[in-house]
Amino acid sequence: MALNSQKKKRAVVFLADGFEEVEAVTPVDYLCRAGIEVTAVSISDNKEVTGRWSGIKITADITLCELIKQDDKNWDAAVVPGGMPGAANIAASEKTCKLLKEMHASGKLICAICASPVIVLAPLGIIKGKNFTCYPGMEEKMPDSSDDLSGKWSDSRVVTDGNLITSRGAGTAGEFAIAIIEKLINKETADKIAQTVLLN
Image (cartoon, rainbow, N blue to C red):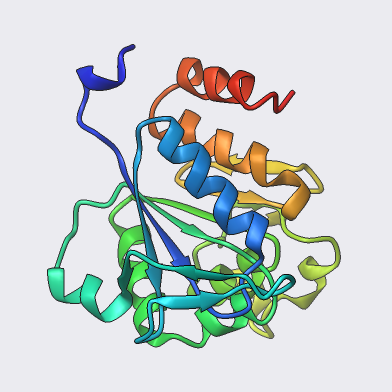
């Protein structure tokens, strides 16, 4: 299926200081290659966001407040990178969490990697009753009310369950991005991007 034969898909990637660089940049890059419109959003009032390991600074396209003012409901997917304290910073952002809950409730694709499935999504009830994965050991850090919020943990590198995609860490970021492309567009396009970047 040609990319121009359907409405262009749109994804928002949330960035907070302390984000895992590979887990943020890889999905942005792969999704753009697939023709998906990607908007990087800083959850703070500053567009410049600092990575966890290298200290690399990335300039987001827009701040969260600017995004909210746009009142744009036409996003198809949200991507939440991991890394600490990046994931914790996103979890502490009430506005980001509210937006994620709204997107999930409206059936949008919610994608999280590394610590974020547990730190960000679990407290919001987004993984409740779902199959999911996360960074090794993070599954043991589920919220205290995990009986009401828990899903079924898997040690798979990427897990897709309905409108939820989760993955394990920086080393699985490519597969994570390909899974998002497959869900948003189709397997043919996902396979083409994987082949182009020599993922396999």
